[in-house]
Length: 371
Image (cartoon, rainbow, N blue to C red; front, side):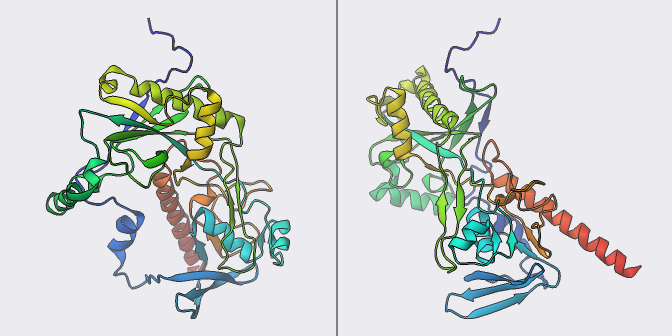
């Protein structure tokens, strides 16, 4: 007979492992998709440009951009423009060109070209909070990342493509279910390193490990909106982390469960003490305050130009911007809701599907001309 889980127990249901533990570098969309076809005659890659406007009216015919030296560049589209500026850049560019919520545009001094109130809304992201532990009896990345030890690691990387310099932000990941959900609702990412104040950036010098915790399906919703008609001015980014009651409760339960993982005998024998938030943070209120003060993005933001068929949707099922022609969006901003875990593979899948849609449409158009 299976043991009935106690309150706040976590049931591990999966483990993430590095895809290439011996590789010197992580793959990327550019390395995996772009670089192999750079020699194609129908591909031109321009870098160091900032797109400032979409040419045309409701029919987009190209883009205008500015180089790093201030030179204006006009690029015309034979068929359509595909906007992939990301969850922040895509709504910003739409709003700069009068596509979005009329109130936002009015406040920025921009005339509304197409009213789409969903532009910039529906921002979602995973919010990670880390537990840190001082350890003994095992070497960690902390002491291998300073002084002569770091020099040795650099040589190790050059010679064998291994060692600390090949580590990602987390080495092991897992999923668990708190008592607040019927399915896995928290993800754990563990690293053989610990960071000052629990925030990725500065490694501590003494041996340490960390465990990041985030809610897989947050209910909090934020927004991204321009505040000026000047393209060089950054937009307002308001993720509204932990604004929903369920999100607050889940991050607290996730931290408690993370502590239980590191209290297991096979791990606990290496643990000296919890460095952050520290054992003094014992109550739910204290853990929540720590989460508010020390959490950060996991860079999984989605949703600011979501797909759908209602008044708040920005693109249709074929990723075409509503009310416009000759303009599609292909990036994480079109996702209506966040994936339960990391978003990279999902965005690549979305891009591959978009390529199929675009190629299919082009073939249909060509067939119609030939008739």
